[in-house]
Amino acid sequence: MRNKVIAGNWKMNYSIEESVKLISELKQGLTETDAKVIICPPFTSLETANALLKGSKIELGAQNMHNETSGAFTGDISASMLKSVGCKYVILGHSERRAIFGESNEFINKKVHKALSENLVPILCVGESLEEREKNITKDVVKNQLVVGLDSVSAEQAEGIIIAYEPVWAIGTGKTASPAQAQEVHEFIRSLISEKYGQETAEKVIIQYGGSVKPDNASELLSQKDIDGALVGGACLKADSFLGIIKAAKN
Ligand code: 13P
Image (cartoon, rainbow, N blue to C red; front, top):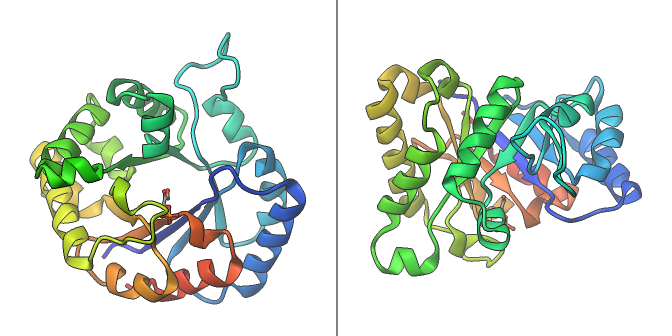
């Protein structure tokens, strides 16, 4: 049985003051749940978030990092820096990083290795664009992202990785993949992991869905056999809607 994992990707939103407000509301409103809950605020709010989350069930993640340990990488941030402010998770290969900042599968693979070597759990994002879906190459795209993204990752390491399937056409558009469409790709992802690492590992890997997840569509998505959680963008920026999605996450 895989417990659900609900993560909020705040993207480039919220000052420290606004972050304090949202985290306080989340802590106050969070009721008993079996789900793992993660928030990924912007870098500037991580230290404050870490202090506020002490003793709470909510865990902390970052939205990106560099694969190198330190050095001349202006504007970037390292795994050890993220750990020093309490991060346990890091989103890697988000489609916005791929599309806007030109991150390749090979670069993302280097980051995956760095995160693993520093005991950060990578949340590795994969997903096709609208054009790729229309061309019927969704599975080829996702397979390539996974094969290269997980290159030289061992089975033992793979067990601890979270994969997020985020169809690009569903991100921030209000167009969610239907539960059946999402389940089909999730099942395919699990089959690829099974091929590479064996069934036992594949059964342990968490595969989240992301793309316009809201409280009113979360239960149906999360009740699909291979959907183990959600990576939430817009709806994680308000306590009510993020808490509503967490409530929908039943095993
Ligand atoms: P939305 O929930 O706003 O569609 O964003 C999804 C996402 O990109 C999470 O990483």
